[in-house]
Amino acid sequence: MEIEKLAELYLRNELNDEQRVELKEILKNDDEQSRVFAEYLYETGQLLNAAEQLSEIRPQLQALEAEVDKSNKNWFRPFLAMAALFVAVFAIWSIKNQPIKNEPIAEVQDLQFLARVNSSELGKFESGQWLQKGKYFFDEKLALTLDSGVELNVEAASEIDLIGSNKVRLHKGQVQAYVPQVAVGFVLQVPGGKVVDLGTEFLVSVNQNGLADVEVKAGEVELRSSQSDQEMIKLRENQSAALTMAGSIVNGESSLASLDTLPNLLEQRELNYVHWPFDRAELGWTPSTAGGDYHDRFRAELKDKKGGEGPQFTEGAFGYALGFDGKNDWAETDFMGVSGSRPRTVSFWVKIPKDAKQGDNYSFVSWGNSREKGEKWQIGWNALAKDGVLGAIRTEFKEGCVVGETDLRDGRWHHIVSLFIGGDNADVATHVRHYVDGRLEAISGVRRERVSTNIDSINSKPVTFGRKMDGPKYFLKAKMDELYIIDAAVTPRQVRRLMERNSLY
Image 1: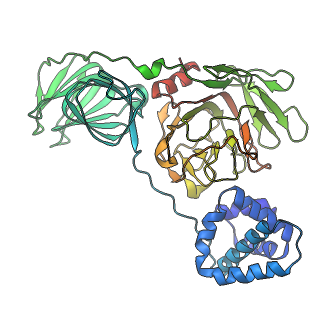
Image 2 (image 1 turned 90 degrees about the vertical axis):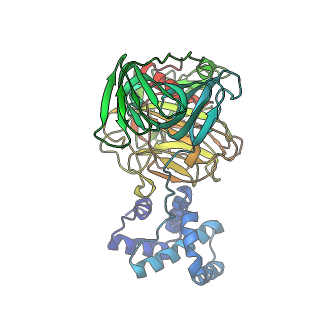
Image 3 (image 1 turned 90 degrees about the horizontal axis):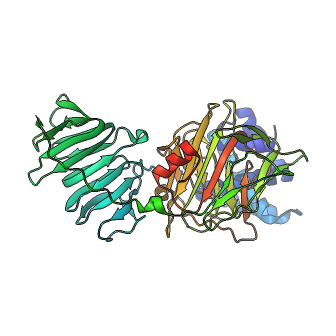
């Protein structure tokens, strides 16, 4: 079996006894294949994970290194050291008959940043400012957008608790909520219970005594008591009710007045972006469009390692799309991407065949320096069960990654957004968002790492589609359409526009 395939099976903990013996013999006796194996694990970011677990067998490693010193090898010593290191791994592994386990995935139950300020009446909060999970008292009128897409107008002198991307508690004051279809199920907790959205726009006011008045402007909600799951009523358009602090539901007419809506300043920004429609080719290149300070000169060259025409045009989500065969073809631009810890959004459509297998997963888009931790930006689908749900969207950063929960390998078009909110010391666990088909995606796994994309290194690579940036033998098997790179963290409403209209505005 080829050494790369054995390396893949090793990373997936799927080697059988025969393959384990075969790999051990290769690493003991074949220097060139050992080098390829070590390079593979180095490129996939697994070397350090394995190395951390070898602290108890340092004498064996030192003995192996001594043997390496005595030998006359003509390939780079670092790769010899890596190969020796993995010989030790497999020697011990074969004795114990169990694989070395990688570092456990860090669990992320809640995102640290849950909402953004659209605008504030007195300017005490900046437009675009991110709010962390926690309790806030607002002494001015405020417009917020939760990660899920729920938009809140908050009256002055209101106290709210940001609990999750789709859950808020109103302690006192008044809130008007607009809930788009993708965020149906939004929960607004009040002292005596909660309001559960069923796709609507509604008002809630809590007075000093904990009495909550609820009025529906459009759609439908459920008003539920905290004392009994069976005490619940549904309210539809122009209906209202009250909920006491003790959890009693009182029918009646509300006197709530709609809040004056503040302008959404985030929606008024002019954004810098590059867009590849993938609708046509000119002499082996597919053109781009652009907005803001970017220009449309960043066309993508269609390439094939065997000298063919490169990716083929096929029916797409909007017009035509590029089809990548998973064997030989990719596309490469002269756009270096977004650098450092600056915010960014990557939006595109993808159609992955049901029979896609590991090795077909890299990559939708990538750029940066793959040789240093946190310095690359690469998006593919997850092929390692230990990192999260197989087939889910995966954004990775060299030894750091975040993985969604929706398996995309169903042969249908899906709209994908990978969004980074930016900021100093930004970590993938708290600063990266995935949206699938307009909905905020839950996290199934994450490896924590700070993001600092390097586009200036001699090793940095430009924006590329359909090929793993640090593994030249691995290509994408999928269709892609309408790819945007935006140097800002867009709003949930803009995510929906990109999906529904193929436009930011």
